[in-house]
Image (cartoon, rainbow, N blue to C red):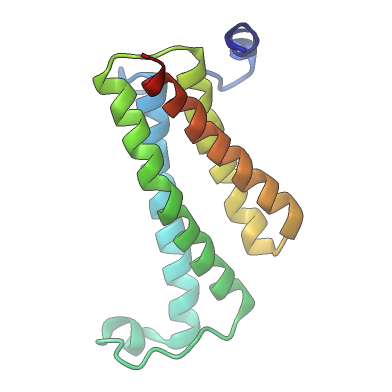
Length: 151
């Protein structure tokens, strides 16, 4: 499997490293930025629906969302918040253990790019493909974790 992953290194944007970080930490940093994209998109459309007074208020009596887009963006953000901490811990773990290889690099990239695809697919209401993309992102996390446990 590692030899297959090594041959993928020629793919554009493969093994992206920013700011002197490893590929895995670069993907983690970019996933943080993606988290803010989720947050701001969801907040914008929810505030459009509920109003600025609700947004600035205590939100004690929050009504359910009525609009499809606001609801989808909110659910996509909730989903991101479920997988991101696991991804973050996996990347930090392999970084602390100094266990970087093709599997961790591709796992981190798979997680990040699938999460990038997931957001517009969820917003557009695409059901089956969205689920496959989500599953691929989870496989990315498992690839990273597999190296942490491999010793």
